Amino acid sequence: MSLTHPAARRTHANAHEELVEQLDQQVRELVRRDGVDPQRDAALVRRIAESVVRDHDELSLTGRVAPVPDVPATVGEIVARVSGFGPLQPFLDDPTVEEIWINDPSRVFIARHGRHELTTLVLTSAQVQELVERMLKSSGRRIDVSTPFVDAMLPEGHRLHVVLEGISRGFSAVNVRKFVLRAGRLGELVELGSLTPTAAAFLEASVRAGLNILVAGGTQTGKTTMLNCLAASIPGGERVVSAEEVFELRFPHPDWVALQTRQSGLEGTGEVRLRDLVKESLRMRPSRIVVGEVRAEECLDLLLALNAGLPGMCTIHANSAREALVKMCTLPLLAGENISARFVVPTVASSVDLVVHLGIDEHGVRRVNEIVGVPGRVEQDVIEAEPVFERRGGDLLRTGGLPPHLERYERAGIDLHRILAGAR
Image 1 (tube, rainbow, N blue to C red):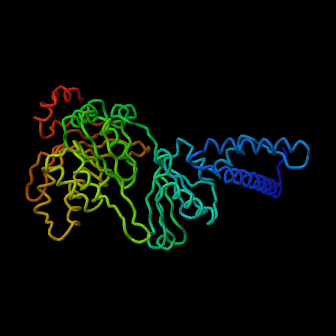
Image 2 (cartoon, rainbow, N blue to C red):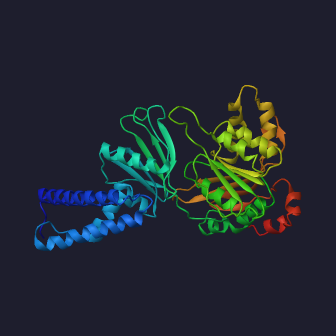
Image 3 (tube, rainbow, N blue to C red):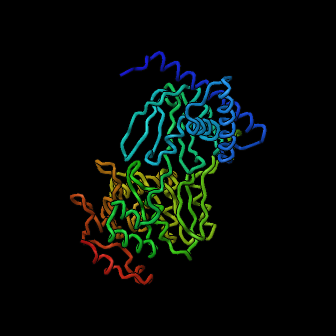
């Protein structure tokens, strides 16, 4: 068995890098000459790259230039450099990769099936900076000393978060959470094992009946996916307005307006906060409001809308349904000193009807852990909750509890007792 000497392997790798760099420059010159937008016209960039690589390969037959060892792979690498996101593009193209993050240029991690992996990819600081600039260019958002963090959406729907060096020690920290549409409806979550058919039918009926639903869970438990699936059950005759930090919601609906926040400009003006969007959405004649995630004082504006009779749903970070209710009582206090717990607690109790709490098991599978009804009663500043479904021994089981507002199901023509009778 013959082994290639390490020095020879390094020489071969360097020669390949030089060849790709040379072809990359030729493609970039043609892209600039023809006025091609490399990210909007990726297919055209690929055709240019194929032409350049093919011409080079034909020229190599004369012995004047080095041959291209793998034409398709070389074309793909050049397209990733010019039109995509360079060394990260293979991970973005891999459907099994859920998230990518860069702690420093030599430590690039990915998540697959809920588990973390350290990759063999080693970048330079210049490459990381170029990747961030290219990603932000496509989003229209910026990052600088005055704005050291940014949330942005990449062209394929992936979510980018960057923390600038100085706030992050040593190097800029980069996260790309991929938009992986594994489920678009509640029935598809059943197929994935996240919930039972009876629980899915119950949630769909609750959306149709106009109940206010709070989706809770930790990071990467599938809150946005669940919110998408719930929103897909909203009747088509209703008008939906959604508000998010960055566009992540994607659900089919004929009458839907999606709003997202905006950074302040270089002059420090023009910022649009999530709280502004929640207030603005109420002026747009909505039948239903959907908020991507509540994190701060916008929770108060959402509660006021729900308390006024406008059905809605949102997500929140919490470790249980009970903690989600406590957090909903805490966040509105950030809105000002004149907001008190005496007002907020009963408002939450009367505004939130269901809490769907999500988790992720030891195998990385996202599951519904509990569905809790909120009957609207408060005892000693504690909101009462009535479990409707709970996960026990790995199974999501019916508990015997009922959701509030049974009359809404009846008005919508839904036989709730028949749906719940299907539970084990």
